[in-house]
Structure formats: structure tokens, C-alpha cells
Length: 153
Image (cartoon, rainbow, N blue to C red; front, side, top):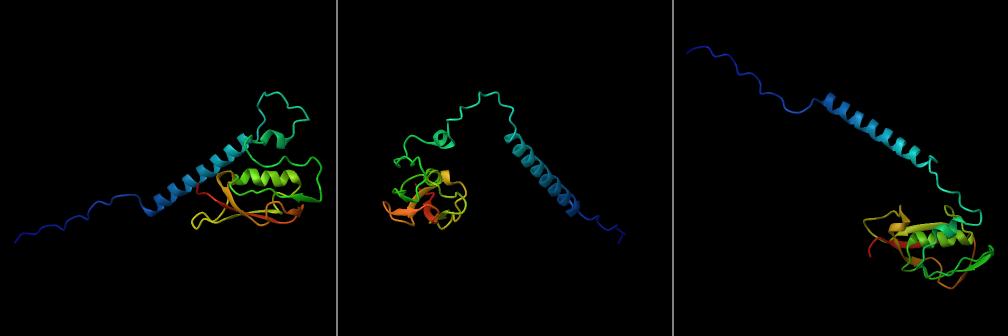
């Protein structure tokens, strides 16, 4: 019997743990820097568009044509008659309440009825299915309004 040297270990495939960690760190850093660059680019005012007249309000610019909601009252009254928001886009319903005097962040709550989409992050992608106060009821401005929404069409 002749002597045979032991077989060398098989060649390793893939990256070492340290290399994977370094790649992940670089990807995370690039993503963060990209987000900062995009965020700062959106806030720059390099546009050469003509300034809008002072009489043009934010509500008038964002007002869609087919809302089926009554026009907001010009004066902020203490009590407002609520329309039927069911079937309405959640962003439009929320903006209508803001135009009436409700605080966008403190007084208007958007909830989901969908079991898999539990948070309403972009109201423009949601449709109102229920509202906390009956349509036609007079509600004091500042009362918490809950709009239950769905993503399903």
C-alpha cells in the first residue's frame, strides 16, 4: 500500500460573514443617502413657474371635480352638517373636514376595515366605508371624526 496525501478541503463558495456585513452596511448607507438626496431635492425651489395670485387658496387648487360633497362654508362655523362620506376617496373626505376647520392630525382619524392592510398611510388609496357620525348630523368643529376605510374596490 502506498501513501496518499489527504484530499484538500473543498473550495468555499460565497462570501464570508464579514463580507456580507460590509455589503449590507454599504447598501444601507447608500439607501439613506439616496433618501436624503431625494428629500432635499423635493424641497428646492428651482422652478421658474409664475407665482400664483394670493386669492388662489390651497383648497381651491386641490379640489377635485367629482366629489359629490357640498362646498365648504366660507366662514368657520361652530357646528357643521356632515355629508355622507361613504364611497368617497378618504383623502377628499379628510380635506373637506380640514377645510371646515377640523385639525388634520388631532381631530380626524382614519381606520382600516381590511384584515391585511391595517394602517391607512396614503388616504388617496383608500375609500371611506363608514363614518363615526351619521350623515346629515350637525357636529361641532373639533370633535374627533373617525372614517373607516378599505383598499378594496
